[in-house]
Image (cartoon, helix red, strand yellow):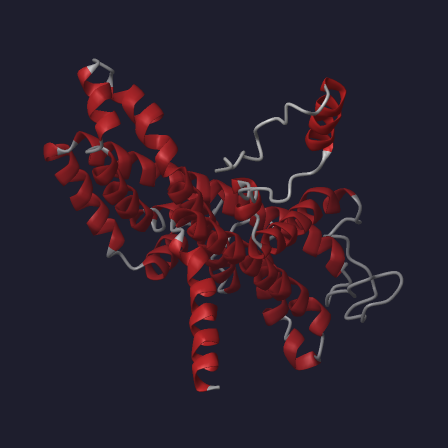
Length: 330
């Protein structure tokens, strides 16, 4: 009975040179099947919404940072009032002959400064009351939660109107503080709930048993896990701050002495630009507000997809379900 020799067993009748040549050919030949590479995490997070949103925001930020150095004095008055866009004035002029493009550049810088200050203050307050209270617990957490709930139910816009109406010299910092006070409580609630979940995990207990101090546990063990949530809260606070400042400036309670998108809309309304058909005065600031809000919203949606992976897989699953239903009906 003849025994079956496996393919990997060398044939004793073949010479050593033939065996070496066969091994070299086998090594140089490309494999028939290669394992599929796992997609990198960075590529998975670079969604189209994130790229488009970041591109819009970067363009607006560059315009607000570099634009004021490239335009003329926004307060310079000339005899060319209510002139439509031309080669000399790309976005036309106001009722007093001021260049709209120059005002738009300076207003973009002012609105971005207000938004960044408010978002930073709101992020600090929400992290302080949410993370610190959620980790320490006890009476301090109850006190922080009570204060957060009180601030959360305060009507934001009426409160800003009341405070702004009683203060005559409304500086940039004062308006930013007013906007920050009314925009941090919701993020603090979210951060507190996340902190309560994280502090019960094993690595946090291990850090406590090892004798780590509370501030190190918060900064090393808890805070890195909350960065996506905090980033989403920062972007949302930035949107809220810019819209809130624009609303205050539109009714005449905005920043005093600083040009913003809302102040441009306020002066355009007082000069009856809409009635006179001077669209080049009120359309650019409104369009900038809409574009920045759209860009920040797309970034916020992308961050939400990072926080909750189900949001990334849900559209794909829904597409698969629709495809299966169409195949069933066919």
